[in-house]
Image 1 (tube, rainbow, N blue to C red):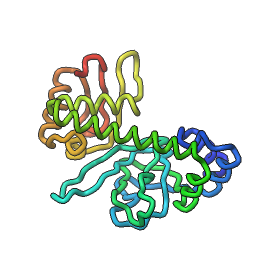
Image 2 (spheres, helix red, strand yellow):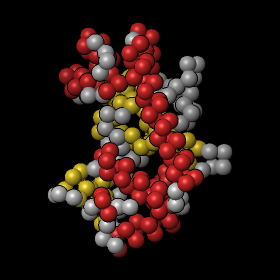
Image 3 (cartoon, rainbow, N blue to C red):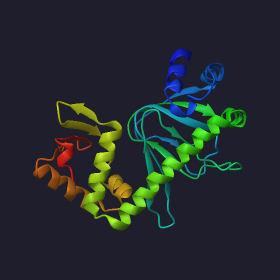
Length: 229
């Protein structure tokens, strides 16, 4: 990826839209382009913190391992999302992992340069704070769903949110999503079980609300968002 392409990618990221053009141009020169194969880890728990990453294309799951040896998926990052930015000032090692769900293209921003930008730009710090608040709100919504909503509703909410974030509109009412997750990973996100995910998706397919093939279960066609409830 040449300089102009990196500049365009960063310019499209809302958090960096507050930077003056000269700083955005300098940031483009400091970024490193990386291609990550499907299932490869971008960083792992315990890794030395070296970069903040901007997802240019593809999907990434970000999570951590709990004390009970379960994997907690905190978010699924897509195009123009920032990952690895939620850092304590003195943190040296990763507390989360990031793994490519699909082939991923990303820009890696050296941590030292990223921190210098924050120190010089109050507006950038403000945008980063808003990003944190949004992510905390999403986690809070998941907690509320876990407490107050049934398993099927949580799985349907996952489908809806995925469709709104990265769905491809087909025809008048149909939306195609390619979530890149296994049933177990969806279960980790929705706080359900793999068997429940398989059952709910199967029932939605049987009722003609969604469609997917057994060969490509990651691709789901939502026939009508209004009937997805």
